[in-house]
Image 1 (tube, rainbow, N blue to C red):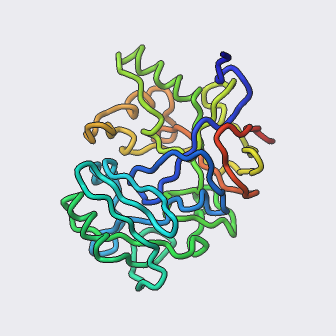
Image 2 (cartoon, rainbow, N blue to C red):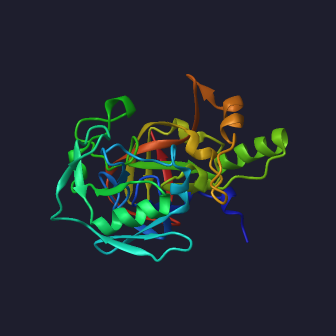
Image 3 (cartoon, rainbow, N blue to C red):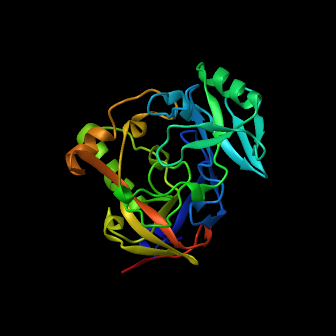
Length: 276
């Protein structure tokens, strides 16, 4: 059987992460809207004051999984009874501090209680009723009319297996470190096939199946990538090794952020074609 990494470029995996900073799930296909994969990052965990709570401060969030279901999201965690949370379309608006959104819709109290107990921290769950209310910042490659969910900076994050192979090679050779999984980087889509490591940095636009996405910026990586997804403990890799090879402007870089120009459906196995 031929090695897919030596063949034409294709979508290797897709993931949807309904709740910001919680783990998501891999999917075989997903509709791509202007604000990203349908259902992706439409929910967010906040503190009592509306401040965003992420796995940067609370690594235990990466031990919880959010799975999209019809009209809502299912929350799961080891040793806990799963909870289905329905979209609170008639819920009350509450202020949130996340940039360029102002307010979101409060979810049912049982969702707040479930998350607060799971994280041992007083938190609430909120929902973004309309992603068009938030925009991609011009500082992150946004243009007028580019909508954004609760995602950090752009609707889509793309990585490649070639780039991860290069990073894991550096880790093994320089640190004797076991390979890291791509999940450390939380991509929307992973591209496989015959390409050089970090070639995606130079793509101005890319066709994925019947969709087209525009390069917004390279993705600077934060402390979340250093959380071991099994132990939920924070270490030093891959930041230390990326700093040796991929440091620029005081930041380290892995993956690229994209904005959909032509929407449609993302499908595992679909061809990927870089465009000028």
